[in-house]
Image (cartoon, rainbow, N blue to C red; front, top):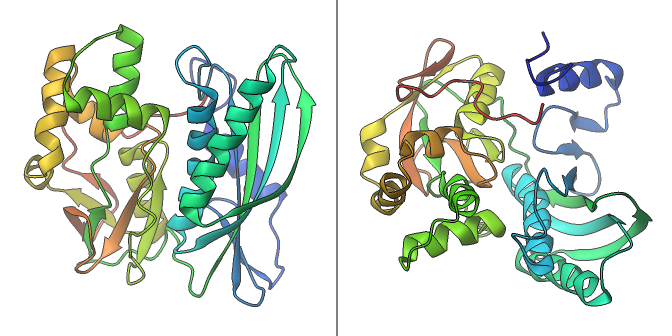
Length: 308
């Protein structure tokens, strides 16, 4: 069913595309519907692509070209990391309006290069075109010995985050409201919104399932629970005990916004959500028998973040 703001939902589009592009090719072990595709090669190759559109994913009056370059690159590399892989190569396609300066374009490229270096990746090609607004599309090629998808969560697993979600949503709220503060939390939130920090050293090779939290924690958790045919039960007290929670909550009080909506319904954090036993990061709940999500904070809906 279409939502009130458009003719279709993102889920409808993904479902249709999965049917259209369905394949029995034995070289493809994970295709459309996960953070990235996994295909056979020497090692298993990981393929993923992300598009960023001016006015939807970034604003040139809020972020520098360098920050935009980092942000778009981080989104791709986080998808590869979520499959327990490392990013090897990037292909970058950029549509420009024609009004950008060479300095802006160079800064964009430097931002892409900076984040690629953090991930250990090389930009090996791309394309340039013209459009009414800036559009950046990056395709990442990665590799892994053993891919981790969204569908392996088991009853009894713990639910972990590589770091607390909600900082990007807090940064967006700050930019939108023009709220000013000299606190470290304020700077951290704005920084995470403009250029998210990816924990490339996060070792979850023993995880049973994993996902990049690009849309929202509640959205990705629902997808993982549904794919694994289990239920995710959150423990809010464990989240509150996290050292980052106090700082994030202080910002939410200053802006008079429910901190739980940032944590569960904010998007573009690009932290990792994983299930397993004794994983690094923050333990936030457990996998139980059943379906769906349990123990969500009051006011948080399961369809919290979407493009359409």
